[in-house]
Length: 432
Image 1 (cartoon, one colour):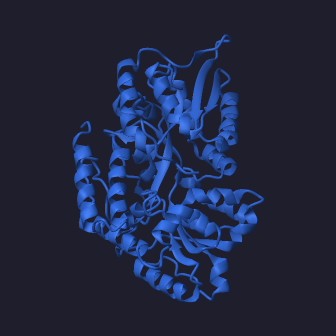
Image 2 (cartoon, one colour):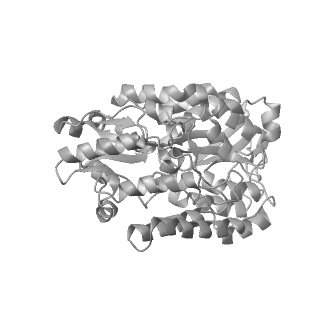
Image 3 (cartoon, rainbow, N blue to C red):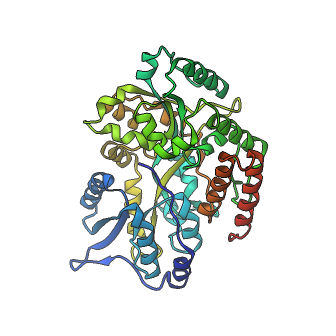
């Protein structure tokens, strides 16, 4: 699934600041059981979540957990309103974009003491994911499922037009040479490459920034880094490709979408999020899985291990919960190797525990014939999704300026200079 970006609005947040901690969520039922509420936004995960809840309740008969599922469109509004009224669910899904605000404003339980008391080894999870839910050195969330970005290459088109398979672990120049050769063999109405050039930085240019060894934001989240040499190189490589005749034309891509171009076999290669593989796990869709193969986004900086952006959700505890200890115990149960194996099998998503990284690939291979090993291969060294308090604001500044570049209003250098200044201004106004 797509681990979507979300926004917590300033107006509601100001109310939250005044009311957080005023009342509590959860409680005890008439029979004396501890009641916990658990909120998620994706109904395709219900079987996995409910199965693990059943398992936990059998081992802990004094606990009753109720799952609440909302659409992503409603989710953050529901969470904000509930937090403002002191009635947020005890446990809920958190994404990296909203995390800093929730943690800073006292809306989440600091898990430091619980992690220590339960002897939880945080090194058993991918650091690129657990780091997303660390604030000022303390852990406020345990990572769960995740996605990153890869290239999907249509093998049917390769065979039909005599295009050789790409090299494994290729670099950027090798990919460009391969695409150039492919263009000479493909009909004019089939594009060698397509991607989400301005629609999504997460599935678009941020991956090339990672591949070039660059950063969008400093590790302490105080400095914009769009004009550093490595970051500029990532932007330049990507947008040189996007503006070339190897990529689907910008106007056509926006109108039709990159995903549709690929599915309709009007593009040989699609750069996309790994969540896009989920439809092919369906029995009725599995037959098309044989028509493509997955490859890493190529290396731009020689020796650089990072080739993608990674984003994963975290399970967090509301500071309003009457039963934070029981809530953490359930999260710890959900985060065990055994539970994450079961979750992977039922929801068909990779999980954060290092020991279950190969399982997703094994299951997808059995169900669809797709070799997804590349997804796990690039996960450990992936660049965590860039984020801060106002991620959505500065991400929009980047997209707005890149859009002007794509429309030939300004140069790429000017777009990055403008975005750098706007992003830095936003970061300077954030809480420190």
